[in-house]
Image (cartoon, rainbow, N blue to C red; front, side):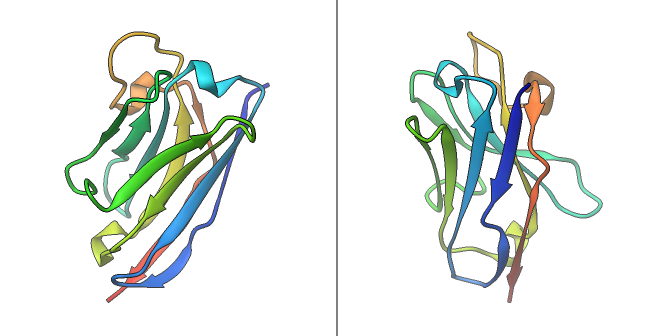
Length: 124
């Protein structure tokens, strides 16, 4: 049984930083892409970042240069370091695991497993 558990969300002032963690169990995520998505109230869930099984990374334009995705294979954990946070980054953040072996999974329907989400609130 695959489980993804996020942590690290919270309230931060604009310009601040947070690091989200996603602990995975039930799969060897080093073999699969791992992604982060977010969903603001009244909006669709959107792609934020992903790290492929071969360690290539991709980011949404809105977070490029501010957010960094990384993995600790020994801990089976994926991280999202978020710097220079803006009020528009406020959302529930979800980590997800994809079983895709080819292509770049940037949409939610490419992902097979999801965490429960963690709230990030950035005050102005």
